[in-house]
Image 1 (cartoon, one colour):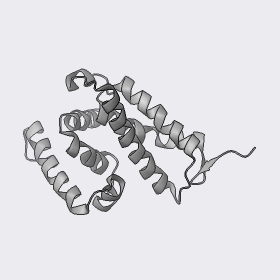
Image 2 (image 1 turned 180 degrees about the vertical axis):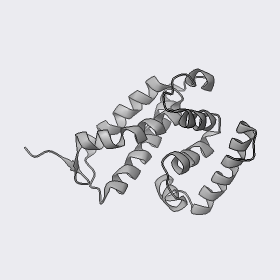
Image 3 (image 1 turned 90 degrees about the horizontal axis):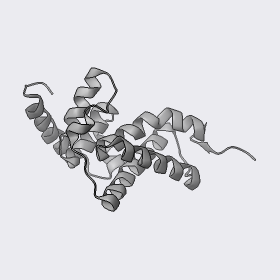
Image 4 (image 1 turned 120 degrees about the horizontal axis):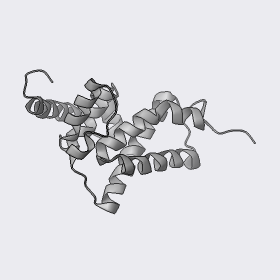
Length: 160
């Protein structure tokens, strides 16, 4: 039996390549690493069993991000459980710069958090974020502008 391929890579390669991206989206949305792990597993479960056809690596990554966001939203709706952001501060193990931005992003309202995360952490451009989140480019620009203002107030400086 032939192994399933997703944009020319095996399932195992896809998990290795995109695990950080999916984990980042899930942690930013759920504020809890245990819940993020549950959603992470569900996202890759859906990838394996739905086996969508992808045009490229970028298409696969965008699909995983979209499914991650939807999975986290469903999870929150189902469990309605919130953990204080300060308790998560110690769970993030990235380097100091990523810790600072992760902490700040988790303090922003969810409607800004996704756009800021995709722009600053995943390095997507406005047009790509609009496609991933199925919103207008101008909406992305507005959310980025307002989100930056929130980040400035959190950091207490002029550079965010």
